[in-house]
Image (cartoon, rainbow, N blue to C red; front, side, top):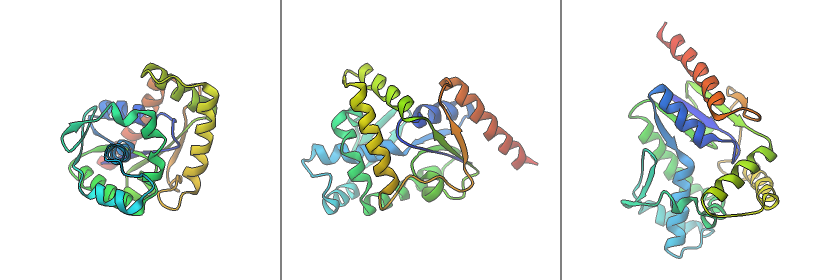
Length: 220
């Protein structure tokens, strides 16, 4: 069974997807981490992230593995490195390259074919898994998402002003909605779920109910 969770940056997709997968006994597929892994690898190899051909060639040479909370690139654990601000500032450019997206979507489908997965990203319900049994479109206000990102960066030792984070968040939303490939779109049969004023536990509990209702329906 595939459950997709799409939505804008900072809506809480990664945390919610991970906890939901734990509740359900499913595995987690953090597709955003894959794009970050490619971006980190490009920067580490001194490749311009905007160079589509070079990044595509690099992607073909990478062995990207997701193991629980860890992200490995060619057997190196880069879980912390892919969350650095320099990666965050370039990942959108990498995600715009059609060849990169094609390879990573193929990888996502191969991984998810092996079991029950909660897959989170920006195009999971529309492109990667259009036949997913349950599709969630997770949203939150710009203010809420910026506050969460600011707290995440501060906790990781990368202090930024809240105003700058909100400006970046607004620009990221604009780019994600108009990008030529992998644009942020709500699947027509997705369930909208706004996380404003809800705790992570409350969000996960409600989504678990939605998924389990579908599972019970499938068993009939």
